[in-house]
Amino acid sequence: MAKEDYYETLGVERNVDEKALKSAFRKLAMQYHPDRNPDSQDAESKFKEINEAYEVLKDPEKRAAYDRYGHAAFEQGGGGGGGGFGGGGFSGFGDIFEEMFGDMMGGGRAQSSGRGADLRYNMEISLEDAFNGKKATIEVPTSVNCSSCNGSGSEGGKAPTTCPSCHGRGKIRAQQGFFTIERTCPTCHGAGSVISDPCGTCGGTGRERKSKTLSVTVPAGVEDGTRIRLTGEGEAGLRGAPSGDLYIFLSVAPHRIFQREGANIFCMVPIPMTTAALGGEIEVPTVNGGRARIKIPEGTQGGNQFRLRGKGMSIMRSDARGDMFVEVSVETPVKLTSEQKDILRQFEAAGGGNVENHSPESQGFFAKVKDFFEDLTD
Image 1 (cartoon, rainbow, N blue to C red):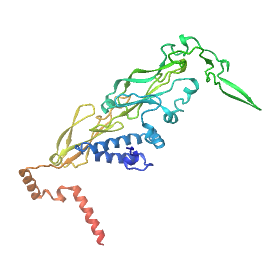
Image 2 (tube, one colour):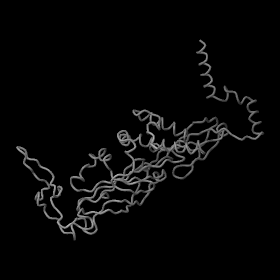
Image 3 (cartoon, rainbow, N blue to C red):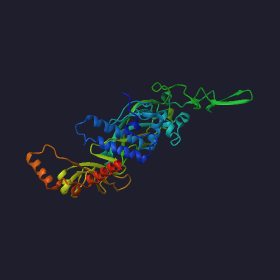
Image 4 (cartoon, one colour):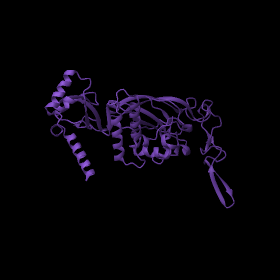
């Protein structure tokens, strides 16, 4: 089944600005949040799709890649082979990454100098891992220096000989009329030397395919899309040339309770109607695994937000933390007993249902409705 366009998932136009994109995401995330739809698998699936779309489109680099290549920009596979960690995957950078970031990271150098290719590894981490940081061990299928020839490409580690065609220059010249054309030597492919007795293990390339186990440190406070660079841990170069680099792309999995925006954490908490009306205290979880208490003033309305300073995400290279915002949802009681219903009827009879005195939002709404109908009759 074809994957839905990210813009259609969020219900926005392709030229949407950052503010409107965030607004559309927040609205849909609230609508399909698992806590509001506890028994709906469809809502949970939709919630994950919304998060996935927003995580791509909010990042300018990812959005640019998506606008150009669609979902193919983030699909697994490619020249580096399979593998994975925590549901992630591994592949060669390929044409997309090289075109988007090649100039910045020296694109094309592997082809011209024999330097090993840069590799990409996708790692998914939890929100708690992003908060605390973690150490992880990953296994990367890659090309390493041949164990038989130590990367030289020659049997027994013998030194290569000077190319007889280009005499070590790596290029040859040909005269065509008034012009002299210079091109890469077809014998040594630009290396300037040749292997007279190729290694039987690697066939003269100086490298072989193996899996490499690496230790990765994920710092606290990383965001979705963060790239970690491991210098020299990419593919080995041809015949002893320098190795490429390994880039680990981090993605933060959606959380069942919290939503993250930068360093801030958002959480929606249902409260009883009585607590909203009379006031009280509630206890909420925090992203570090602790708890916090919030004082609810009497007359609290659904949608009111409470800010807990310093209870949000860790901030990279800092001891500071973001804030946590708790939005309350007033819950209407269900399955009332006869006695409870009688109490509510008594409350209503005593004027509890009086919009003017007790329901400011309803009063404002019905005042607008009254004005609306009066305008129609004028």
